[in-house]
Amino acid sequence: METGQLTIQKSNNRLNQNNIKELSIQISLSGLSFCILNRTSNTIELLQHQDFNKKLTPFDVLERLKTQLEHNSDFNYAFKSVLIIYQNELSTLVPKALFNEDNCADYLKFNAKILKTDFISHEVIAVNDSVNVYVPLVNINNYIFEKFGAFEYKHSSTLLIDTLLQKTTQEGASYYINVCQNHFEIIVVENGKLLLYNTFEYKTKEDFIYFVLFTVEQLKSDPETLQLYFSGQITEDSELYTIAYTYIRHIQFIDPKHTFKFAAQSKPNHNYNHFIILNSFS
Image 1 (spheres, rainbow, N blue to C red):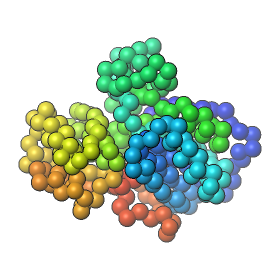
Image 2: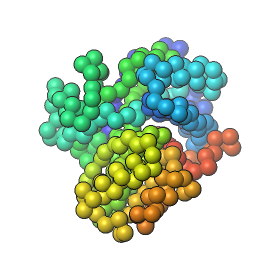
Image 3: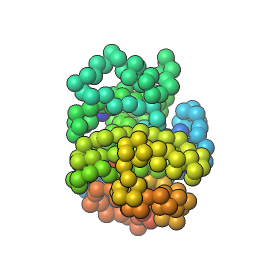
């Protein structure tokens, strides 16, 4: 995968070659996630998530991010790499053969509301020969560069699609839903190929199941036989799971693909709650 990146390295950012660490930060308007991987010991040393309980402005998200990074000594380290993951609905996929960088804004206008002042980025998803066009947050990129120096950024859907297409080998259609606080991402893979990627905002469990069943109906799948996999902010005792199981019989949770160990203070209750960020370390 190609990623957006700022590549000038700060001169004082020297690595400790005997203790190499990598940092991933997942950013949305409704929450932040942080993950530190110690490559030397193959251990997740920090895994945190902060919900905002509502959608904030990019300015307010930056202030929350600054508070976390500047008041936690875990982030005062010369990381080997820093990755920022943007999770928003401002993205669209374009077949690589049809992609023209000059038309990025036009691609996004079909399914997202963008401003003339929005900075638009793109990255190649090699596994299915497509280009993901999306809007990162420039104010956050500028701050991260000031704090850490060189870093990369990706859109969350790039990681989801790349991971699932490499992971899925079964025949037929498989539905994957990554749940967030006020929206969810749905990916449908059929016979190893991407059939659909979309995002929906929801406020109630009824909104949630409406959009799920609407997608199932449009793709002419049978809710009695299709396989649905959940990841993200959902558990078996949540109302979203309960209402989904009312209509869809075959439901499982899907864990990230990794071999990491976890420090005691960072071990999650469920790996699938952190599916995207734990899959961000290549």
